[in-house]
Length: 151
Image (cartoon, rainbow, N blue to C red):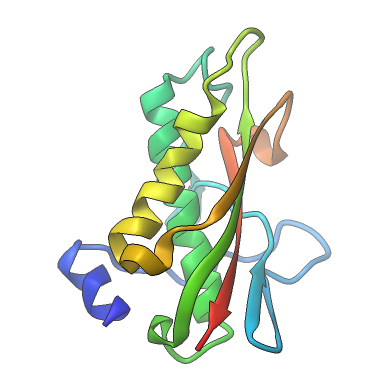
């Protein structure tokens, strides 16, 4: 049913992005899948680069977080056969590459949270942290990681 919802939303999951360093994109342990932080890569290219509240607007940050969540789901799917195996989204952690004085990190990370609720409904409601940072890998605007529980 979640795979169908993705299709209805016009979202096609990309191939799981390759790691930028010495880690694996996702790991399944017991009933949980933990993802590594995913940045807003699209077709192998960084789609949102720079500081939110500086070079990028809050809306662009929101879109970057949404793309990060899509990439998180692609790495979850790389370790399970289908997103339909997900019982619920447990946790979202979002890091926002923030310009000095930018304080709307929660609104930016809503890009990921809203997408997960669109796809998973009530099972997409989760606990969350939204953190402002001074730098991210490749100067990415946002980095998101998720934890999901499997049925």
